[in-house]
Length: 303
Ligand SMILES: [Cu+2]
Image (tube, rainbow, N blue to C red):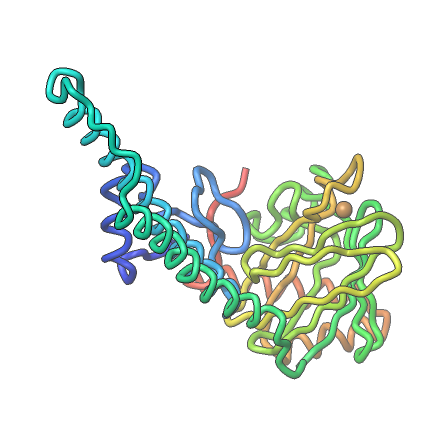
């Protein structure tokens, strides 16, 4: 299990921690999937996801500081200007200095939030040259991932409980086939490669989301939207349709396995040759390799 370290942001978090109490405890985040009692994000494995987390922590610290300041001010005012201490209230209606301060300071705070926010937005929409392009097509209620350059296409349908048990019996590590997230055909991508994901839909609006990649984009019928990611760590990363699309909205997960380039090439070649059995075997071997690298894999038992 990977615990997101907050110690490198200590000065801000010290302040946040003092005011927020238990809420500011370091989150025990899941790697590629949610974990029990998790309160933070899932682990970031792409530069964009890392920036999103940093921006979230930064804005959170500002929110905590403002809330603490207002709270302290209120407590002070209640004490200092109570009827007992201040029997004759002042009739002041204007104070130029304080009015300038309470206008300028919020503007500065908003600017301090806007600058990193625009930087992040710019990074999300500046696509580096692709190493791989995937077309993700949402359907009610599953996803198809087409690899135009490799000439292959993968339909992924969520595993039912009995299928999940069968997958575990066939050798898949249980933590890599989480309930309501695991699919029958995983999508493989090479580690470290920039992957462009072109997203569309055949029926209603879905949304292609993988939290660990910091990717979230609507799948709109008749249109192509796009996102990109560059996974820096091998592993299996799950996402879900994140647009309320209908009755099985909750049951159309996305499962992306990040593997070495050679493994990806072998898998794509097997699919191209229509050798589904070999492709499955490559995935099973990648899954076991991942479990072997306990630093990379998330070995939580999944119930
Ligand atoms: Cu959907």
